[in-house]
Every structure is written in C-alpha cells, then in structure tokens.
Length: 98
Image 1 (cartoon, one colour):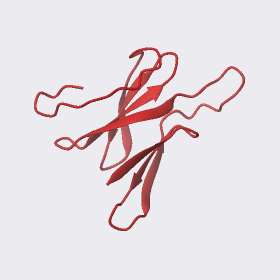
Image 2: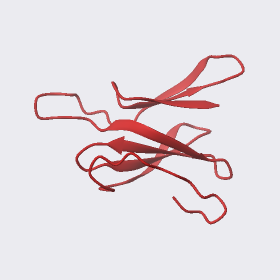
Image 3: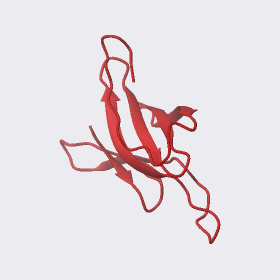
C-alpha cells in the first residue's frame, strides 16, 4: 500500500502498489478554501505497520496530526495544535510512540 497526501484537497490517498489502482481517498480537512479559510494540508505520512495506523501531519498555523485506520481509511482521531507549521513525523512501533 502506498499512501499519498494531496495538499490541494487536504486528502489522503491509498494506492495498491501491485495494481497501481487508487483504492480510497479520505478528505481530512473538508473546509472550503476561501479568503479567510485555509484548510490544513497533509505533509508528512508515517505508518505503524503493527497497528496499521497511518499518521498524517496537517500543516497550518495550528498544525494537527490525523490518525487514520490504514485498512478502512477512516479517521480515528485528530491530535490538535501540535505546533505552528509542523511537518516532521516519526513512529516508534516498539514503544508505541509518535
């Protein structure tokens, strides 16, 4: 499975690497872009292979980390206000650390 972040529409895309087909797309920030509205943009993606959780940073003035179920492509939770313009992300499966 290959996960790609689409910064234009704030989405996470799952692609089957064997077939090259897009399996699913999950919009993480569905707010419509406007003069005073700037949806968060997916930037870094990390996968915990033990739990099949996909972690995605949402870049913005008050960044977030989205937690997605890699099998169902459903949003599990959102970690709010991580840092301003936060991009870095790493997963430590053994110690269950993000």
